[in-house]
Length: 282
Length: 185
Ligand code: SF4
Image (cartoon, rainbow over all chains, first blue to last red):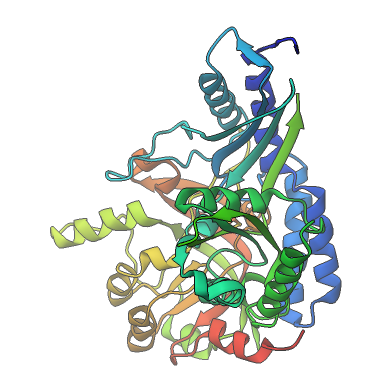
């Protein structure tokens, strides 16, 4: 029998605090690297100038005064919790929220949550959106995602017909991203969730945006689809900031799970070039 | 594609020389406003009230900046998605507004208003917010302080780079650029 590992929730609070601040000011290396490559390859002069500005933005922000984007996002937390972990000295969700609230206050990040009807700003960027997954072991893995509203608005879930199949999925994704055009701050990273059920597909799509750029999909069928969609998007002409070019998306990531014989759920979660994902293993 | 340096307030002469795709370095006063501020401004007009500033010749920047650190006028300040201002922009253009700065597509009504009243929609680079924020010289909240990041601010900018997206002739840079660069991989 494995023994129980106790984790004080204040460790989680501090981890979230640090991840949130780092996410706001320091672009993940995988995205930075891809942007540099895109700058080299871009054929449109305007597109190249836009990518140059985006790269400069990464540098300015890294000095720690101006966040990468004024929209410092909704705090989205994915947590893989080992089943042998016991959280002590408080409530896990409260600890996450406290970490977020402190980070957004101390690091001069924008508070972007509001009442959906009155639109009144809540002033603390709470609540965090928390997705927990129970896994074997006694570790906790936290993925922090500061998700901007502009790209999030260009996302959707669609229940396709099973007969739509692979080609229907590709067409739906490509048409959707091209229709979104300049709105989600291209170059984007497109997360696609296939299967599961209605809500599961959406969670898969968001999780897909957190995968490191350049990491190949282990399923060769999906790797091929990702490549095909990416080529179509970068041939759309939309380009950086929608001002024309061959860099519309930096990557397309698909996550897939089995679904019901009568359904084909498809979710598309769009992430902008300021795709702030950070992770830590505790 | 030409390049211009312009100083606000803008005149009809400034506007008619601009074509979709031109790059403009804007200097002078620019006002900020997003959804919530626009709703209040339009509500105030409906009630026969005043706007927080006279829109004649002015430019509105669709932005909700991050908080200013001590010693700085403003935080990061990139454009927000403009389509949410579709219902409001034509009303302000009719009142003399000469430009909007944002990102993403706007409606046919906005394009029509730009043609009819000679105004321009400028596209800025979404997510280049630290670069823009660090180039803003002065910022002052002039209305709706309770809206926090969405309050109306008076900014002073110097050589803020923007692209003419919708001009006063009905052209659309997003459409033109997309056509020009399709299938070029
Ligand atoms: S979509 Fe991303 S880059 Fe664009 S404004 Fe929102 S957070 Fe910033």
